[in-house]
Length: 500
Ligand SMILES: Nc1ncnc2c1ncn2[C@@H]1O[C@H](COP(=O)(O)OP(=O)(O)OP(=O)(O)O)[C@@H](O)[C@H]1O
Ligand SMILES: [Mg+2]
Image (cartoon, rainbow, N blue to C red; front, top):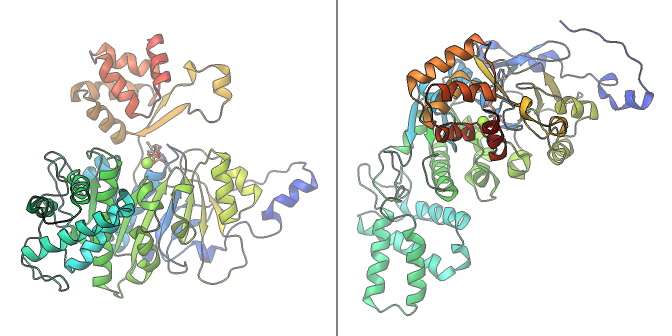
């Protein structure tokens, strides 16, 4: 139920409130779709209409989700994926930069692929592609991730050696490979370059050495995550239910980005090869959460998926704290933008500039709590209503056990007044549980900590939480690891300990 509040305001204020002159929400027939062919998200703030998402009336099925840390981006993504799988049997592949979906995917019965922790991908695997196209793609990824593009001769040598490696392994460069033949690896490519160097006939040995040097960062023992025989069939990912590609174990951003690009390339090829079918809804969704390098580069396949996905019923979800990290070609073309809590003015300016919403909407977004959201939808047909509207909040799939860790008691007055400082941290039970496990706290201690937290209505002052841990023998070092995993900054952590 909505309440009407009467207040005195100036006429210029009234003018800013677009909702008084135009309908404040899309008409209900745009919001409420056939429940067997759409995804329930929540009820709208002004008229309380149940909003069910369908891309039938939208320009495409892709979504961008933006909001500050803790605003509820991942929560929304999880809710969306689960419901899409109920309604349409949609498969999902999460490119999980920080490993934050792992616990949830495990709990939901999905598959976790942990690169570097036992799972490997050979980026030369073809999944039905012609070798010559795969070489182009790999070189494209190297262009994005390294400066090899500035060294044309090294680039050429590397590409040629890759082609040679395929030929040596019995492939025909411009033919679709026969099933069952093993692709070569980047190690075979370095071997070819080494042989060329030793043979001494090539006239610019320095170029050759540098090309080798660049390639070896991916083939060195212990860092050869992409240069071994694959332990998984990437080609099948788009039809394997819920899959979490956990990249958090890879050593740095470059490796994570290379894995993400390879996954996107393979999925794009798969999508094109499978073509269109008349099934309902979405066949697969790829999630890129905080994968800014992959979402920002003009040459990324995320852009191709955004351009072509609709006709293949293939959706992309990009989630980011920073909307300017998402490539314009993606951001301005997604059919749906989900705005959760935004704190920084420059991001708000960017969003308001590109989505063109009212100041009324702007101030509402600025005041959002966790899970509250504004949606922008691009409808196929020209419409006569503002396409940004407010949701009461994203309604989650399962009853939530959210734990609140409060740090406001240890902040100074001026810090309390500073809106850029986070005062409360919210975690679902499984998130908090996995953070404690990953920090090295034993499971019986975790259970008893949860017991204590539950007695306190699941809200705790951070100092009390630390005391609960230390009282049970958790070392200071482990507590620090845990607090950092909550994304608490070191100065705050130091302050917590000075109190405890
Ligand atoms: N709509 C909601 N209803 C109830 N709880 C929510 C909602 N959205 C988020 N939460 C809770 O708030 C916490 C933070 O949410 P989430 O992890 O989704 O944030 P995020 O935006 O992904 O943050 P980050 O950028 O740090 O990954 C979680 O514990 C989650 O359960
Ligand atoms: Mg998140």
